[in-house]
Length: 114
Length: 113
Image (tube, rainbow over all chains, first blue to last red):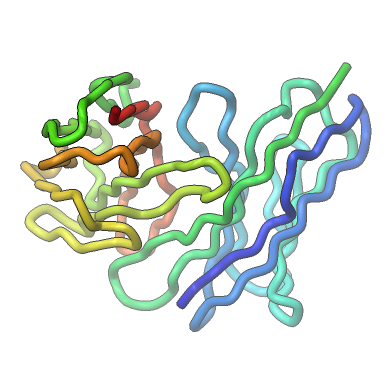
Protein backbone atom coordinates (compact mmCIF):
# COMPACT_ATOMS: atom_id res chain seq x y z
CA UNK A 1 0.00 0.00 0.00
CA UNK A 2 0.88 3.65 -0.11
CA UNK A 3 3.14 5.00 2.61
CA UNK A 4 5.07 8.12 3.48
CA UNK A 5 8.08 8.72 5.71
CA UNK A 6 8.72 12.13 7.14
CA UNK A 7 11.65 13.46 9.07
CA UNK A 8 10.88 13.02 12.73
CA UNK A 9 10.63 16.09 14.85
CA UNK A 10 10.51 18.12 16.76
CA UNK A 11 12.56 20.64 14.82
CA UNK A 12 13.57 23.81 16.63
CA UNK A 13 15.08 26.71 14.72
CA UNK A 14 15.90 30.34 15.27
CA UNK A 15 14.16 32.98 13.21
CA UNK A 16 15.67 33.43 9.73
CA UNK A 17 17.24 29.95 9.74
CA UNK A 18 16.97 27.61 6.76
CA UNK A 19 14.41 24.82 6.99
CA UNK A 20 14.34 21.39 5.38
CA UNK A 21 11.80 18.72 6.25
CA UNK A 22 12.46 15.47 4.40
CA UNK A 23 9.67 13.38 2.92
CA UNK A 24 9.87 10.16 0.92
CA UNK A 25 6.95 8.08 -0.27
CA UNK A 26 5.93 4.82 -1.84
CA UNK A 27 2.85 4.76 -4.00
CA UNK A 28 1.40 2.86 -6.89
CA UNK A 29 1.00 4.74 -10.08
CA UNK A 30 1.88 8.37 -10.35
CA UNK A 31 0.68 10.27 -7.30
CA UNK A 32 0.23 13.96 -6.73
CA UNK A 33 2.18 15.21 -3.71
CA UNK A 34 1.05 17.62 -1.04
CA UNK A 35 2.28 19.42 2.04
CA UNK A 36 -0.32 20.35 4.62
CA UNK A 37 0.24 22.57 7.66
CA UNK A 38 -1.55 22.55 11.00
CA UNK A 39 -1.30 25.65 13.16
CA UNK A 40 -1.95 25.26 16.89
CA UNK A 41 -5.57 24.49 17.68
CA UNK A 42 -6.63 24.34 14.04
CA UNK A 43 -7.35 21.80 11.34
CA UNK A 44 -4.95 21.10 8.52
CA UNK A 45 -4.73 23.37 5.52
CA UNK A 46 -3.05 22.91 2.18
CA UNK A 47 0.38 24.55 1.97
CA UNK A 48 1.52 23.51 -1.51
CA UNK A 49 1.29 20.73 -4.04
CA UNK A 50 2.95 19.26 -7.14
CA UNK A 51 1.26 17.00 -9.64
CA UNK A 52 4.06 15.70 -11.88
CA UNK A 53 7.76 14.97 -11.89
CA UNK A 54 10.06 17.98 -11.54
CA UNK A 55 7.14 20.26 -10.65
CA UNK A 56 7.91 22.72 -7.88
CA UNK A 57 5.12 23.68 -5.53
CA UNK A 58 5.48 26.94 -3.63
CA UNK A 59 3.54 29.08 -1.19
CA UNK A 60 4.35 31.54 1.62
CA UNK A 61 8.08 31.17 0.92
CA UNK A 62 7.96 27.37 1.19
CA UNK A 63 8.99 25.18 -1.74
CA UNK A 64 9.04 21.48 -2.56
CA UNK A 65 10.09 19.73 -5.76
CA UNK A 66 8.58 16.47 -6.98
CA UNK A 67 11.53 14.08 -7.43
CA UNK A 68 10.23 10.93 -9.05
CA UNK A 69 13.65 9.26 -9.30
CA UNK A 70 14.16 9.48 -5.53
CA UNK A 71 10.43 9.39 -4.63
CA UNK A 72 10.92 12.46 -2.48
CA UNK A 73 9.15 15.76 -1.86
CA UNK A 74 11.27 17.66 0.66
CA UNK A 75 9.92 20.91 2.09
CA UNK A 76 12.25 23.91 2.25
CA UNK A 77 12.16 27.52 3.33
CA UNK A 78 15.07 29.89 3.17
CA UNK A 79 14.23 32.02 6.19
CA UNK A 80 11.69 30.83 8.75
CA UNK A 81 9.59 33.10 10.92
CA UNK A 82 8.04 32.59 14.34
CA UNK A 83 4.65 32.44 12.62
CA UNK A 84 5.79 29.30 10.76
CA UNK A 85 5.66 27.31 13.99
CA UNK A 86 3.26 24.49 13.22
CA UNK A 87 3.05 20.80 12.36
CA UNK A 88 3.81 19.92 8.73
CA UNK A 89 2.42 16.86 6.98
CA UNK A 90 3.59 15.32 3.74
CA UNK A 91 0.85 13.51 1.82
CA UNK A 92 0.93 11.61 -1.47
CA UNK A 93 -2.40 10.93 -3.10
CA UNK A 94 -3.51 7.58 -4.37
CA UNK A 95 -3.67 7.96 -8.09
CA UNK A 96 -6.13 6.49 -10.52
CA UNK A 97 -9.83 5.85 -10.25
CA UNK A 98 -12.45 8.22 -8.95
CA UNK A 99 -11.87 7.85 -5.23
CA UNK A 100 -8.83 9.86 -4.28
CA UNK A 101 -7.46 9.54 -0.78
CA UNK A 102 -4.43 11.08 0.79
CA UNK A 103 -1.96 9.15 2.93
CA UNK A 104 -0.57 11.47 5.58
CA UNK A 105 2.84 11.25 7.15
CA UNK A 106 3.14 11.37 10.92
CA UNK A 107 3.84 15.08 10.89
CA UNK A 108 6.86 17.16 11.85
CA UNK A 109 6.53 19.73 14.60
CA UNK A 110 8.44 22.92 13.85
CA UNK A 111 9.12 25.51 16.52
CA UNK A 112 10.74 28.78 15.51
CA UNK A 113 12.20 30.91 18.29
CA UNK A 114 12.70 34.69 18.03
CA UNK B 1 -17.23 31.58 5.10
CA UNK B 2 -18.14 28.61 7.28
CA UNK B 3 -16.30 25.92 5.25
CA UNK B 4 -16.32 22.68 7.25
CA UNK B 5 -18.10 22.80 10.60
CA UNK B 6 -17.70 20.11 13.23
CA UNK B 7 -19.61 19.69 16.45
CA UNK B 8 -18.94 19.30 19.30
CA UNK B 9 -15.45 20.74 19.84
CA UNK B 10 -14.88 18.80 23.05
CA UNK B 11 -16.50 15.69 24.49
CA UNK B 12 -15.86 13.40 27.42
CA UNK B 13 -17.45 9.96 27.44
CA UNK B 14 -17.44 6.99 29.73
CA UNK B 15 -16.50 3.60 28.34
CA UNK B 16 -19.50 2.03 26.64
CA UNK B 17 -21.36 5.27 25.95
CA UNK B 18 -22.34 6.21 22.43
CA UNK B 19 -22.17 9.48 20.59
CA UNK B 20 -22.30 11.01 17.12
CA UNK B 21 -19.90 13.57 15.76
CA UNK B 22 -21.50 15.91 13.29
CA UNK B 23 -19.88 17.45 10.22
CA UNK B 24 -21.30 19.78 7.60
CA UNK B 25 -19.73 21.59 4.66
CA UNK B 26 -21.13 24.45 2.63
CA UNK B 27 -18.82 24.25 -0.39
CA UNK B 28 -20.96 21.83 -2.42
CA UNK B 29 -18.17 19.26 -2.19
CA UNK B 30 -18.72 15.71 -3.36
CA UNK B 31 -16.29 13.91 -1.07
CA UNK B 32 -16.12 13.90 2.73
CA UNK B 33 -13.75 12.21 5.16
CA UNK B 34 -13.27 11.41 8.81
CA UNK B 35 -9.73 11.24 10.23
CA UNK B 36 -8.37 10.68 13.70
CA UNK B 37 -5.14 12.25 14.90
CA UNK B 38 -3.04 10.63 17.59
CA UNK B 39 0.39 11.64 18.89
CA UNK B 40 3.14 10.03 16.84
CA UNK B 41 0.64 8.51 14.42
CA UNK B 42 -0.26 11.42 12.20
CA UNK B 43 -3.70 11.38 10.59
CA UNK B 44 -5.41 8.10 9.86
CA UNK B 45 -8.47 7.77 7.69
CA UNK B 46 -11.48 6.21 9.43
CA UNK B 47 -14.15 6.39 6.73
CA UNK B 48 -14.79 8.40 3.63
CA UNK B 49 -17.64 9.17 1.29
CA UNK B 50 -16.64 9.75 -2.31
CA UNK B 51 -20.07 11.04 -3.20
CA UNK B 52 -23.54 11.34 -1.74
CA UNK B 53 -24.97 7.90 -1.13
CA UNK B 54 -21.63 6.06 -0.84
CA UNK B 55 -19.34 5.34 2.07
CA UNK B 56 -16.16 3.27 2.33
CA UNK B 57 -13.84 2.09 5.04
CA UNK B 58 -10.50 3.73 5.50
CA UNK B 59 -7.46 2.59 7.41
CA UNK B 60 -8.98 2.31 10.91
CA UNK B 61 -12.78 1.78 10.67
CA UNK B 62 -13.31 -0.65 13.58
CA UNK B 63 -15.59 0.70 16.27
CA UNK B 64 -17.07 3.42 14.05
CA UNK B 65 -20.00 3.87 11.71
CA UNK B 66 -20.77 6.72 9.36
CA UNK B 67 -23.76 8.21 7.60
CA UNK B 68 -23.71 10.48 4.58
CA UNK B 69 -27.02 12.13 5.38
CA UNK B 70 -27.02 14.34 2.30
CA UNK B 71 -24.41 16.13 0.22
CA UNK B 72 -23.62 18.55 3.04
CA UNK B 73 -23.50 16.30 6.07
CA UNK B 74 -21.35 13.35 7.09
CA UNK B 75 -21.63 12.00 10.63
CA UNK B 76 -19.40 9.64 12.60
CA UNK B 77 -20.89 7.41 15.28
CA UNK B 78 -19.22 5.60 18.14
CA UNK B 79 -21.65 2.91 19.27
CA UNK B 80 -19.74 1.80 22.37
CA UNK B 81 -16.84 4.08 23.14
CA UNK B 82 -13.51 2.65 24.28
CA UNK B 83 -10.47 4.38 25.79
CA UNK B 84 -8.55 3.55 22.59
CA UNK B 85 -10.87 5.95 20.79
CA UNK B 86 -9.55 8.89 22.76
CA UNK B 87 -8.27 11.13 19.98
CA UNK B 88 -8.77 14.30 18.01
CA UNK B 89 -11.20 13.76 15.16
CA UNK B 90 -11.17 15.80 11.98
CA UNK B 91 -13.76 15.99 9.27
CA UNK B 92 -12.66 17.08 5.81
CA UNK B 93 -14.17 17.60 2.41
CA UNK B 94 -12.98 17.93 -1.16
CA UNK B 95 -14.50 18.59 -4.54
CA UNK B 96 -13.63 15.00 -5.48
CA UNK B 97 -13.07 13.49 -8.91
CA UNK B 98 -9.34 14.02 -8.76
CA UNK B 99 -9.29 17.34 -6.93
CA UNK B 100 -7.45 16.26 -3.82
CA UNK B 101 -7.32 19.56 -1.95
CA UNK B 102 -8.91 18.83 1.38
CA UNK B 103 -10.62 21.40 3.56
CA UNK B 104 -10.57 20.51 7.25
CA UNK B 105 -12.79 21.33 10.16
CA UNK B 106 -11.27 22.54 13.41
CA UNK B 107 -11.52 19.17 15.11
CA UNK B 108 -13.27 17.42 17.99
CA UNK B 109 -11.22 16.47 21.02
CA UNK B 110 -12.73 13.28 22.45
CA UNK B 111 -11.73 11.65 25.72
CA UNK B 112 -13.07 8.25 26.71
CA UNK B 113 -12.60 7.41 30.37
